[in-house]
Length: 278
Image 1 (cartoon, rainbow, N blue to C red):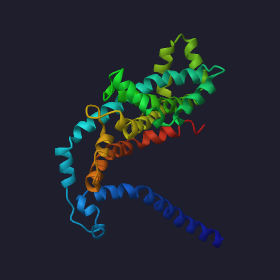
Image 2 (image 1 turned 120 degrees about the vertical axis):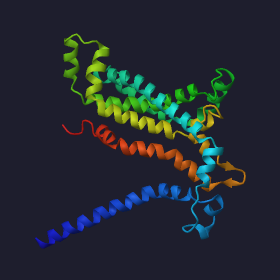
Image 3 (image 1 turned 90 degrees about the vertical axis):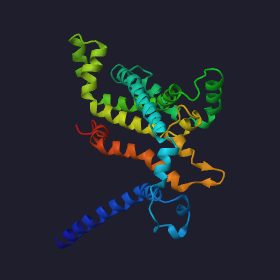
Image 4 (image 1 turned 135 degrees about the horizontal axis):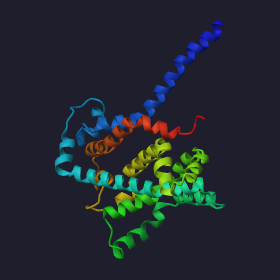
């Protein structure tokens, strides 16, 4: 009995310690980025100033005054919000049709959509740049960035929503049809309220993916539609990386999404566990 008790006490010590160790490993890069943002570019590369230095807000002041941070942040908000909304507007009806009115090819279509995520982005970079610059004339526009973000995230949106919708009893939808509810009414009045947790978590994750997208937003923009990813990429010069300024810009770029995730963690957990408990 004593051995069981000792083992239980040992488990209560080991598991929290292991959890803290994992958390430190994951969050240390973020901590170090914030820590470095209060160093000058010179201090950031000096070994003797690795831990002990004179903190400064110079990088943040320089970012706000000279880097036009708010314009880049506004572009990130505009493209991420609209790309998320359009992805949901397209994804909800598509997932509804696949979940409640499937065909023999539904699973094949889902697999095909997911397979498009395996396409190397570099393989279509040149055609995308050439077409949008020379023929369509939409290079470096919000429309292009929103369109690209929708296309690359739509397969994940449909897959997630399809999974959530499949957990809703089909009899509820059939009962609505028997009462004369239209297809739009089923989606608006029955499906969305029942799957709100899953839709909210899908929207949150899609917004995060759009906000963090760097490859396309850097290569398909120059000035007008440039997002925070472009601002971060701009802190690179032939002389090397300006680590102090780069850390400050990166901190300012990830801070909004971290705060959003913190305040929406309840909805995120609810959506990710939707249908897990019967």
